[in-house]
Image (tube, rainbow, N blue to C red; front, side):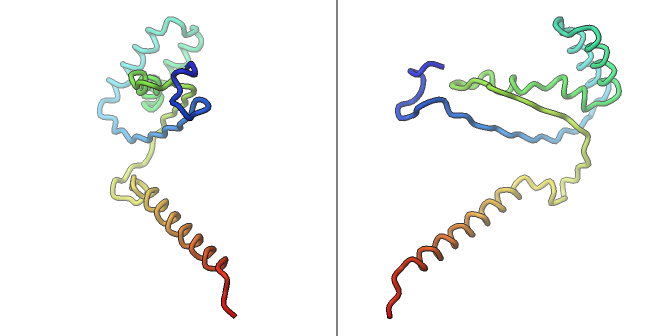
Length: 135
């Protein structure tokens, strides 16, 4: 990125952490495994010993198969004005209950709003304490 690409008023690139959490239902275990094996088999840069390990992992665990098929780079390659600097991802089996509070996607937002309200109340209390008191 050249300095001419940076909007006026900014001294350098800004970094943003994008966190995405997905829960996927495996509806075709064999299809998923086969697709991952095809992906591994077609990787011309993967060393043979790593390929054997990857194929064994994929055959044993669908979440490993999914991890070989999903690449965060693919999510952002068509987004203009950004450059992927770092990415990591993992897949694991999970217990999923859509009715459980644990899976409420908006729960964090409610917590953040409560924290913001508490911070505002603290700021108002600080202002009240700083005002001169009559004698």
